[in-house]
Length: 114
Image (cartoon, rainbow, N blue to C red; front, side):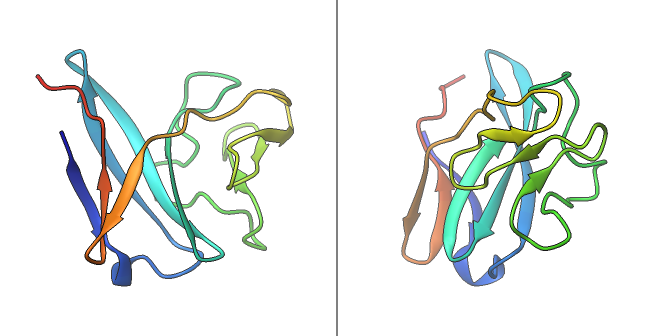
């Protein structure tokens, strides 16, 4: 199953978009980001404590745009790998999501059917 997340043109470099989907009947918060021209998607869940990285405002990038940052405790994640490189959960990784870009649209793929 697939879910359209955004048009590629609507996600310029350095921007993110929040979305959610259901897994086993439970809502999962997530986000898709354009990091230096590469589109990535992760569950929106800090690996330190079960909190979203943003405060619901869709702000995931550090001030210089080089890392994702958890606004609660300052954990820093590399956008290409999801690996926490600084903070209370160093060495843990964000949960990546499978996406495809087709005809200028970004889709979440491999969704469970419910």
